[in-house]
Length: 222
Image (cartoon, rainbow, N blue to C red; front, side, top):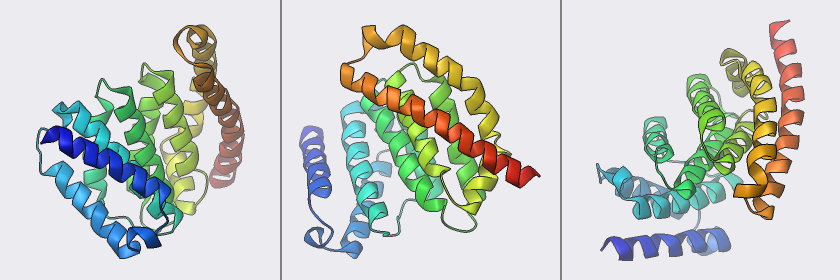
C-alpha cells in the first residue's frame, strides 16, 4: 500500500506542476486537495519514519502550494501543521525531503509576508530557515533555505518587522563568508556542475539581499 501511495503522490506532483488550475478543477478543488494531503500526512503519527512517503508527500505539497501561491489561492495548512511537517522533515537523512520542506516554508512564508497579523509566524519561519541555512551539512539544502529566506523577507511590512526582530541581517552577514568558503572548499568534490551553478547564484543573491536588508534595518531602526 505504501508503494502505491508514494507512486500516486509522485503522479499528483507531476499533474499539479504541469496542468493549469482550471484543468485541475479550479481553486476550490486545489484547496480541498491541500486539506486532504494534510490529513493524509498527519493521520500517520510516525510519518517521519517513512522516508519514501515523506519525500513523495512533501514533493506533492510543494508543487501544490507553489501552484496555489502563484494564483493567489489561499492555503489551508495551519502554522502548527506547517512547522510540524518541517521540523520532522528537516531531520530526515533524505536530502530531497529537506529541500522540499524548506521550499514549502519559503512558499508559505512569502504568502504570509503580504498579510497582516503574521509577524510571529514569520519570525518562527525565519528562525527555522536561518538554522537550516547555517547548520545543514548539505550545501544544496543550505542554498534552498537561503533562497526561501530571500522569498519570505523580500517584501511586506510584517516581513520587514520580523527580519529586524530576529536579527536576520547580522546573522546573514556573519554567515556570508562561511557560505562562500564552503562552496569553494566542498563544491567541486561533492556537487554537480548544475548544483554549483545554483549555489553561485545563491551566493550572488545573498550579497544583494544583505544590501537590501541593510536599507530595511536602517529605515526601521532610524
